[in-house]
Length: 211
Image 1 (cartoon, rainbow, N blue to C red):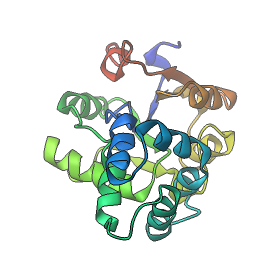
Image 2: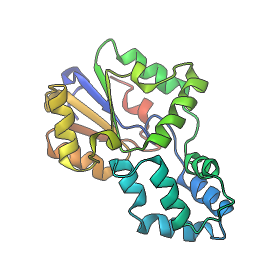
Image 3: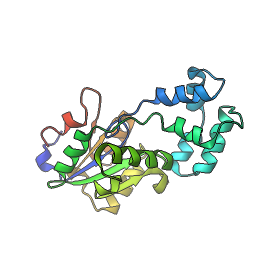
């Protein structure tokens, strides 16, 4: 990639980059609420548009809960909060050293966040962030945060990257984007952004080692 000396802006993804996630925990939690196996839950999740619609902001929290209840054949005895808790089960604890490293970089780079996400998860992320670091919201770490449900756009479509660049007048060749999804990385590259894939081996701290 380009030397970080040429980079002025860093855009971070959220899930699996800053906050670890484990979808199997949500599949298991939904299985526990229903009469469905974890594999059946996963198949219904993959086949449904409900979750993408939630990330795009097409539906809100109330509609999402209703749709999940119907999708998984959940009984009326299952509370809305139980569904929310199961949906949030995939969100793990945020390592404090990741936040500390991001804060260190704020003196040398403009820092941004771009996430395909939903309001239920963001509320939970802020609670986890506060418990783990004492910081109560992502907006206090980054110059600007963009959530897909607010924009009505999702990665990897190029329109979301173009919107981000235009809103803050960022030069793509001076911008690096960090994401755990190869399609999202490819989408960013299509508009000229330098993009790096975050993996278990090449995690956030590894990639930012020489920044």
